[in-house]
Image (cartoon, rainbow, N blue to C red):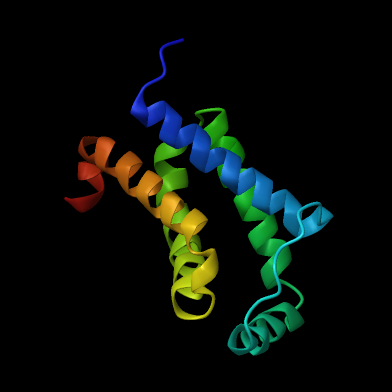
Length: 124
């Protein structure tokens, strides 16, 4: 199997999504305590009771889709609002943790760019 930049991007993105999705349910990675300004935000959305479980399921599903190279075009589009919120949370409230979301943004952007011809029919 020849590894291309597209495949590496897909596998890295898929692995990150599955890893952090599973961690939301199993807590096997100890994450640093969020900054004070982020605690109110996280408490609010966590208190809803559905946001984090939904995010967990979506991250695992999207990650598996990318890892197994199934439904990747629709996965990348559905991932955009999730990734936007992850990136903006880190940019605005917890910039120390922005490296992984930045890698995810670059990988997703690259993958969408590589498949841009396949998305043209959505824009007509």
